[in-house]
Amino acid sequence: MRVRCTAPSATSTTGGTSSAAERSFNMELNCERHGAGPPLLLVHGLGGSVRSWDSILPMLARGREVVLVDLPGHGASPALPGRQTIAAYADALEHFIDRNGLAGVDTVGSSVGARLVLELARRGIGGHTVAFDPGGFWRGWETAWFRSTLAASVRLVRLLRRRIPALSHSRAVRAVLLAQLSARPGALDPMLVRNELTAIAETDVFDAMLRELARGPLQQGTATPPGRVTIGWGRQDRLLLPRQAERAQAAFPTARLHWFERCGHFPQWDRPKEAAEVIMQTMAR
Image (cartoon, rainbow, N blue to C red; front, side):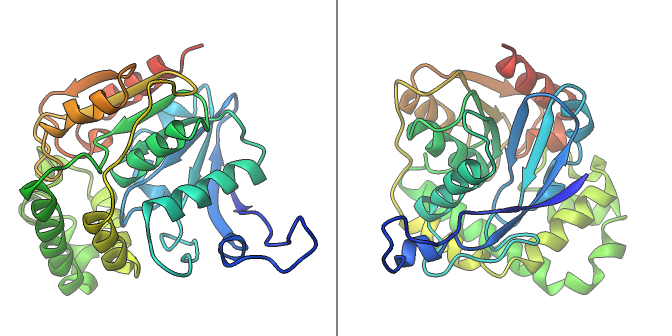
């Protein structure tokens, strides 16, 4: 079932004029709800959309109400005004959770979305947390590698934008376009590839957010998150290198680190069944 979800109103609680920060949340965030049970919030990565979770959605929706949300400026959600920072996106998610009655919700994120759910956990927001290959734990040259290689890949995707529907059906093309993100790109479902590449090409805030990610602060952690934390990492992640996993775990010392073998940047692509199992094991109450 697809529904629209709203971020908080900009109405000032003090009776005065609302601030710029408050006005930034006077928007609708696109979301979908699937299944029944305790809510589970899924947050996609940079250039993604609610469709980024299609490979594991049916497995998760068997026992949970899965809430999929388009980040600001992604999918069908409008962009935030001003700088596209992690702090601003985390604020938007925090307000989204509050407005939609999701206090204490368990969260799952991928890539930038993984960093966002870790940031929510650092703030004490949500319940249990699963973060797949989160950003923000790079050091030195790894930052330039992340920005430059991803920017180059996105430029190529944009050049091929009109041909994406046809090209997605070619194993050879999938292997070339997604070699940095998947350990076995040729084996990926063509529809998944089509949805992801189209979303990347149509995300107008992509460049601005990529710039802010590379220039902004590193992700901070906490020893007292509101629930259990699992950090998952693909052994063959060529975007956010596996060495960063131990830094993420050090920032969240109570977290469990799970390695996905024969897996690239997106465990839900390369190891969907295992990814769903890791999520449900973490969320088991």
